[in-house]
Structures are given as structure tokens and as C-alpha cells.
Length: 122
Figure 1 (spheres, one colour):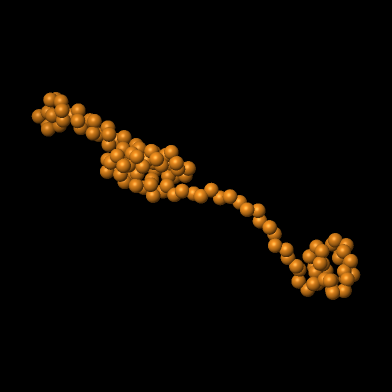
Figure 2: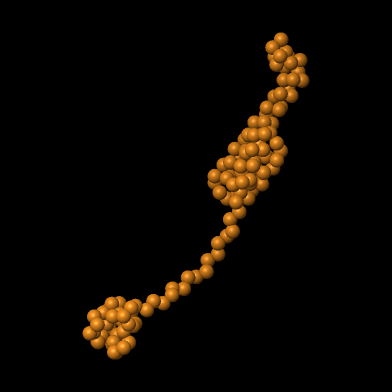
């Protein structure tokens, strides 16, 4: 049987609980321990926004050389807290920067006379 106060298992013929000292009256001890539900304090969980899809789209649009990739990367860097997503946004910005640099070099090469000669191998 079990002590009605502390819930410890005690011998069936016990008159006192050997753990807490409670006097056991006939019929007060139970065959199974009585369990009280433990109250769980409510916790606030901040809703997580998933920026992983935006990070992937920023990568795709940056690779394609689009301004949408730049915009998505900037928005993602401002709002995302996940380190992996932030890395993808930084990579997107780097790829977009590489495209801008490529466009600038292409314009310089194709608009200068020496650049045209070098470009076409004259």
C-alpha cells in the first residue's frame, strides 16, 4: 500500500509511514499512489517566421542577375535571425555584386576602342 500523504510505498501492516511519520488509519492508505497533476506554467513562444524560402529565392534571383534577388536579400538580412539563412542572404548579395561588377566591366570593355579590339581579338 501507499502513504496517503507522501505517496511512498509502505508495508500493508504499517500503522505509521516510515518516510513521513503520518499515522495510517485503516482504509486511508491506497493500493496505488495518488498522483496530483503538476501544474505547468504557461510559456510564451515567439512565432518563428520562416525566411528559408526567401533565402533560396534570393539566391536564385541573384544568380539570374535580377534586382529581385537584391531586394529579397536585403529584406532577409534585416528580419531573419537564423544564421544559415543569413549566410544565404549574404551569399546572394555577393552574387548580385559580382553580376554588377561583370556588367560594369562589360560596358567599359565594349564602349572603349581598345576594349573592343581586346574583346574581339584585333
